[in-house]
Length: 358
Ligand SMILES: Cc1ncc(COP(=O)(O)O)c(C=O)c1O
Image 1 (cartoon, rainbow, N blue to C red):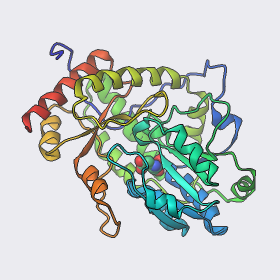
Image 2 (image 1 turned 90 degrees about the vertical axis):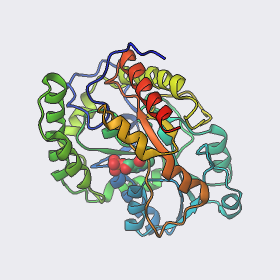
Image 3 (image 1 turned 60 degrees about the vertical axis):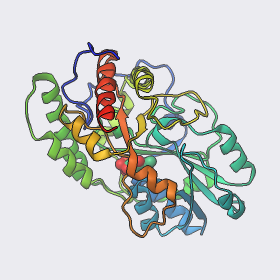
Image 4 (image 1 turned 180 degrees about the horizontal axis):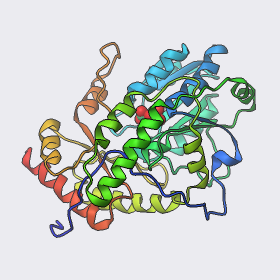
């Protein structure tokens, strides 16, 4: 264990504001090259896409193991849905689903924790006529400079990866859907993004001079107000997305921190088999016996891991493994605010908390 690494003042939570630096990258990201819509949130992008599928009466297959925001977007769009299961390594391995999948059905694949999706799975679903939506809310760096894709749609949520107050990006490779997407009347709703920007400014002041503002409560209020509908991104966020330099650098930091944390916490980490190289993951998902205990130990050190996801929708039929995941999972962040010393310190703190629960 590396006990000597320096402590980090506060781990997790909203990102501070980003410096607006003009991009030095030669290649523009996929959403600048392909047909894309820029929504207020990923759930809004999902809602808009699913509204199209509802209109042409397509069935969408969702994983049972997914956040309530995705299920809500599907419900609100009134699209026909069915559900498939994942195994304890978060892989789709559901023979019932395979029997029931019809050509033309839409399969919604979540890139859990930004740890990739097996190419074989995508190709085998495609060969059976499935339309693939890849939810990259947890894998922002996937495909930014890639030229060709097996998926039909990509969905991004930049807010989870750096300091941008709102935004969801839908990239579409299906021309017949694009004419629908072009015609939608996208509305403005900046309530959440205005609050989020205040929270981010507060967080920057906290990170730079320890200024104790109410950034955490503003962040919670903003998250509660993230809209789901035909809502467009704020101009502030669109400009930032277009100018931002930092994507690849931040991705490298994430990969380094992920590897440091995974080395320390491997015993508890979900052994997701990487289908492809990692691009810049969301965090290290671990399974703990007594999550309340571990969280409380970490809160004492100002470490706030996220939980993806507590699924408490009583109407949602969860199989044994998904319920187990939902009750025992937590995500150790590996973002660019941690340098390698910070990541080692964080790993050590989590390791000690996990020793305590034994
Ligand atoms: C896998 C996944 N997809 C989509 C979303 C929705 O993202 P957003 O908060 O940008 O609407 C989330 C988070 O809520 C998520 O975890």
